[in-house]
Amino acid sequence: MIPMKKLLSLLAAAAVAVSLASCSPASAEGPSAPSAGTGAPSAAADESWEKVRSSGTLVLGLDKAFPPMGFVDPQTGELTGFDIDAAKEACKRLGVELKLQPIDWDNKSAELNNGNVDCLWNGFSKTPERAEEFALSLPYMKNRQIILVPSGSDLKGLESLKGKTVGVQADSSAETALNDNPDVKSSFQSLVKIDDYSKAVLELKNGTIDAIAIDEIVARYYLTKNAGAYAILQDQNGGDVSLATEDYVVAFRKADLALRAKIDGELEEMAKDGALAKISEKWFGSDVTTVEK
Image (cartoon, one colour):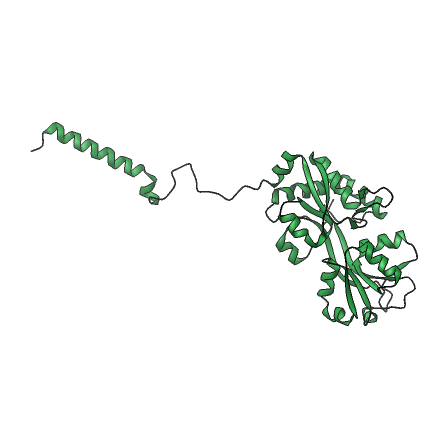
């Protein structure tokens, strides 16, 4: 027989044990559940903007031969262009410095994803494939892919390019547009891939190619710079032949949504207060930007 005092002690201990068990997370969620307040491990925080802010520098990857968006001024040797001016203004408002990093445009994806640059901002066209690969900013300008020919050329319509030699910048939106028009592409005698459009225009001038598939924005720069030397290929009704219409955007790494949000915000503010229009007027003579005001 257990003495009354000892029996009472055993009953008290049992009651405490039951009470503790009922308060334990394991009793409700199983033995592997985390204790209250600790939470399960979460996805890594997006620190893309914080990294740029703390470093004080945004590294912009660009093709240095893509006038008037980003290129080397032959008079000064300095990098200049619409996109560079827009990026400088955005960075000034964000309180960071802009570092311009010319890259091999063929390797732009690797340059961005390897962390060598923070964004690609240089007449970068939005496509479904790029929307899958990158985090893209809001569109800020419309662009078409057109055909540039020598002034006075008797070429008329895409069908007139049959048997001709056509140049295009490697890994450009114009090349993508031609790939999306296989009947047109296959009609060429050859499609010559050229490093950049400045070289392509020189090839056209020298007569080693018959036409260039090119961004309209870039083509109009050369039309203005060399008045009377070149023309946009016309259709039978006298309208510009267009291979595709697209938007220009800024590209970020897929996970860098915080940095994208900062740039989007500044583009919107620049549109509202007129700064973006002022930059556009400098380069194009009018406001051709498309950010909603």
